[in-house]
Length: 82
Image 1 (cartoon, rainbow, N blue to C red):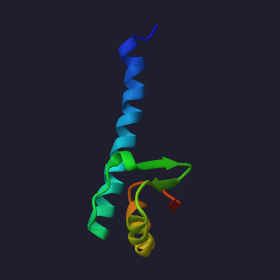
Image 2 (tube, helix red, strand yellow; image 1 turned 90 degrees about the vertical axis):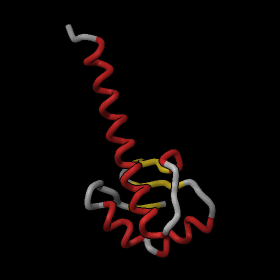
Image 3 (cartoon, helix red, strand yellow; image 1 turned 90 degrees about the horizontal axis):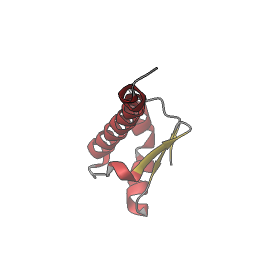
Image 4 (cartoon, rainbow, N blue to C red; image 1 turned 135 degrees about the horizontal axis):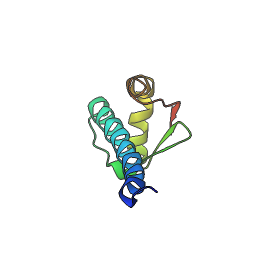
């Protein structure tokens, strides 16, 4: 029988990986457009990064979308940014 710590350790490692992905994406966006995004404003679903924010932020990301996608895909497999 597995110990309870091992059971929760599995969930903990999945959550840590998700946070690392979001931090990586935040850093790339900050470096490219010069604007910080909180990790709470980023979600990843079905290979797509979904960013919450104003229209100005989304416009800046859209202008440099190809380069941002290229840089993100070096570490994380992503198809699109919305």
